[in-house]
Length: 176
Image (cartoon, rainbow, N blue to C red; front, side, top):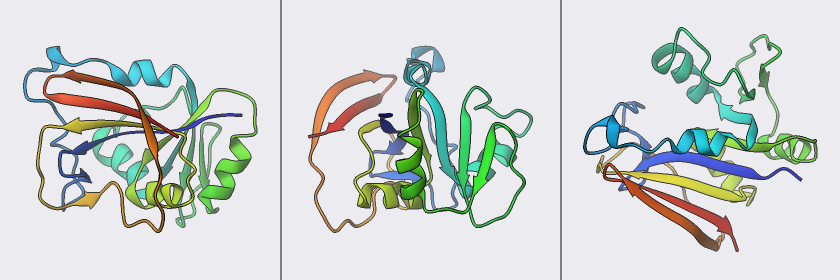
């Protein structure tokens, strides 16, 4: 069965975007030469990426307008905005929990939950995430889009690994 992983960065105070939805603050405290390529390590075991419309729209309009950065992965965009799908990008208006239950039974590598907050919070509420890869950015935003919303139950996690570089800290947890 495929594993479902959240791989995301957040500010020290728990936000994944500032109050305008921007992520231009996602950097360490020094030069990029001090960074570790955690993404390349992570994505070796991934063949599917799931994201919400806002995340998709931000990628194609701001972060990488000239090139689809996840061309090596099959992408599912959970949206109410009808859009034509392609071989690699599928726009779906489906309950993400049901979609993930179906996808995790298929053969292949694991599934990455890329964002955004609404999608992540739905999946956390349903306890669908097996692994949490969270990078803490050395920034306090004070407001914005929270990674985790209010929950109606507790999810206990086990810390597998920590790594610090360039003022950032990677935290990797699995469910207990």
